[in-house]
Image (cartoon, rainbow, N blue to C red; front, side, top):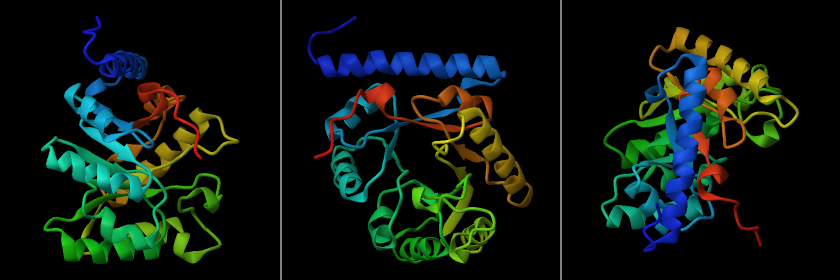
Length: 244
């Protein structure tokens, strides 16, 4: 029921209820506990006010794709003493490592040995605790879309090398894997393949239990394949304004 005081909050509350319903249904179909799946609200292009509304509605995991947008939002929410866990989910340039480690709780998109090294150096200087990171997996080997791939032609983007760089660092903590489903793959096939990669990784690194997969259109397939974190943008916040 609308309060009339804040139509945007009412809209977000309605959308949130629908998304949580989808997650619950997907978990029921997969025989999983909905408590195993973390909803990350991806708020790129949306204002800090929407993040505040989501926090008030009980969503504390917030994802951003670009540091130049994420950093000021994080500062504003910190000044408001809002309880937010920031997830950096976009492709990350090494020169942004210093900024990102200042606010991110989990970086999902580590996909090269040099990036791992840059984050490790920055975290060592700026943080008291290790920075949690995921290795982004390229399932189809198209490195232009981000991710590390098994047997990559570019050695610094080889999946095993990136995993070793993170695991062997002093200020990073390997928490698991992330992927974006290739455009030419059906989501179930993509996420089942990621589940195989995640299973193999846990064999070597038992604490690497996070599987970040699934977005607004395909969260059901991701949950069926074992995703622990789903990254939801448009289904929660609405259609994004066109980029100018």
